[in-house]
Length: 193
Image 1 (cartoon, rainbow, N blue to C red):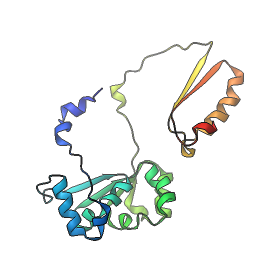
Image 2: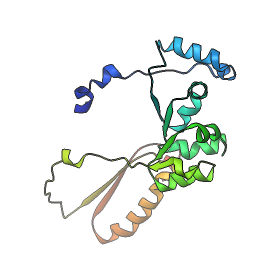
Image 3: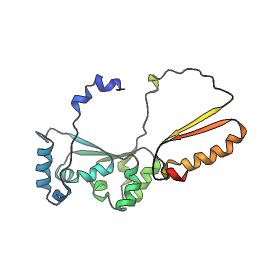
Image 4: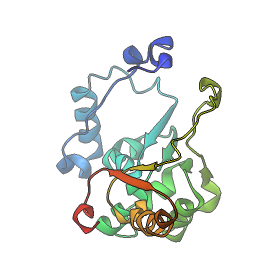
């Protein structure tokens, strides 16, 4: 299934996937940049007006590029990059990102607070919720099988997804009616539940 906007705006032909040079070159930014340009077949970096980097981790991956550029940089945090990554790399892992990025987005106040707690200036961060275009969905009245209700959760089995709380809530309510709870996913806590 391909979203209609992908074809409408010819996004397949306008999208270029890039790879980073080896980490060993990070200490020599000019060599890193030359390798980056060559391996990604980039003709000219001067015609780029701004960078939108998804995930703070990717900013760190391409940090030499951002150290050599004075272009506008927007970094969008999404999840693990503002939680698990801190546990793996430490609270200061985004020091340069916080200094260099012109704007940062997060999907929640909680995530914004996590970044501020680790040194990001709060004024740089905008809460940008993920959403859908509700006009693309037509409301349809539905009737439900009163004999049985099925609940479904789809997600990774990790603490931050709160599956433990869904299970506890379901344990309380299922006593009052015939219900089934299905969970689809995988992750480090899969065997715990």
